[in-house]
Length: 158
Image (spheres, rainbow, N blue to C red):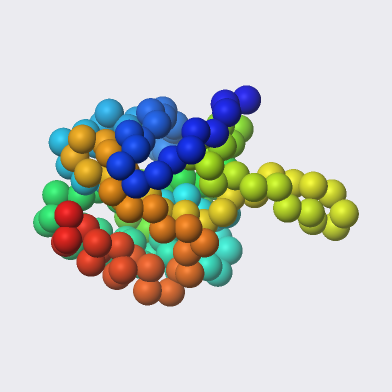
């Protein structure tokens, strides 16, 4: 198990390599040279996560015009990501952190009790990275409605 690092604004973002819905590996190095919005979400096809992913997809062109990529990460597998993407017309890239290692590394994994059983979950968190892979903003416990617009404004201010 990877030990979480204490991430803060100004920290170098930890490297990652994860498969996407098409089984293509995505890594932090793929995005160096442009800003990156890395949003961690709980689960595909739940109301809040769907709203968040659709919000980012709806604004993806505006992010791209600003030289910024948007990538979502959850503990769901690649097949579930593909079904989620296709069902809702999601255009942002979704990476599968099935074993939760990247979620733990970024400090977004938390243990919650469900039906009396402790389970690891993801705390909805967004990291905004600059072109050098430095964390410029961390937004924790995100409320999905309007979140993409808030992040877009922060990107405009980078």
